[in-house]
Amino acid sequence: MVSLSWRTKRKGYWLFKEGKVKKDIETDKRIYFLVYGDKEHSVIFDKTKGKFTCDCEYFSLKLSDCSHIYAVKLFLGVENERD
Image: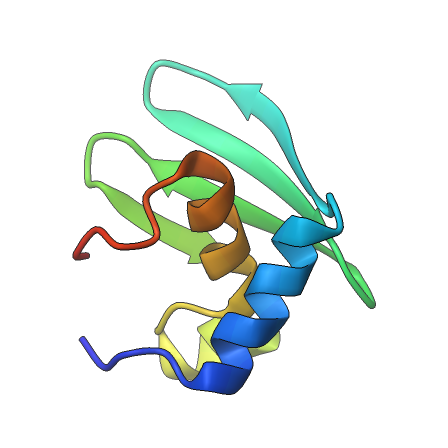
């Protein structure tokens, strides 16, 4: 996996720091988060696969962690874990 750019990390850090990450719902298989920035984005952590997904355009095009996923990882305290 390609490492995140400093811009992506910076944006994710500020989303986290400003309290823009909210845990929405947790089930046996997934945790759903809302990340509030310019728009509201949904980040899902699939517990069975150990993978994050986001509904933003960046993730859809690159299939790589975006600032919203990075913010959620900071929220969970797992930003240094390998995907």
